[in-house]
Image (cartoon, rainbow, N blue to C red; front, top):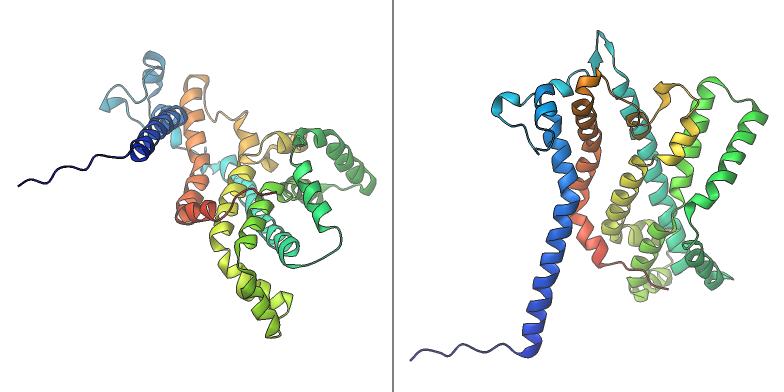
Length: 305
């Protein structure tokens, strides 16, 4: 006697239908987002002839047209060190500094607004939520005016000017409210009994912060690292404004790519694509490092009022 197959309930059918529609929509969006990246990667391996004859193809038209010529000279070109390593180094150290300061400030601020009682806390949080609605570009002009005024008044030149400019590139990137709210919402999900128990045992805020709260926040910290690293590495408008009149050796990789060809006009497209792929490697590496914690971080945080 064969068992009859159970008929799905209406709620189960609705849930399956919603999952199917969501998967199809996400698949289409993923393809649209990935298409330029695939085209960039395939074009970077095309020969100059193939670039002219088959610019519409994703990958080289034949095995003989695959080449690594566009990746040559990134480190050493014509017997001298190329600018590419310097640009990558500028972006790398400034991005890492931005990430480190962002995580530290977010941890301290989030701990204060969740576990420390102080006057005006609710007003402070409402102000932060309100400030998120203000477009960041509004502060560009006054920030640049302040940057130029301080530099001119202090007469900063030479290597000091380099670090002064990068201080202005790094510090604004550490003040994002969104990442702090992610950390604050995770801290708010920690049972208050844990903190109260630690306080009853004589633990101060410093010990609770380092021994209890921070170890629990690793997933959210990795999420903030990914968001901050990507945003800082891809930052263009503000660094371009600050570095526009400076030596090309001081450029970040994103600023440099706006005018970098590295070869003749015939090979411009291939070299531009290869350079973009090369510049994308740090983001891919940081994503691989943080991907395991990213889902956990998203699952344990959310934007709450």
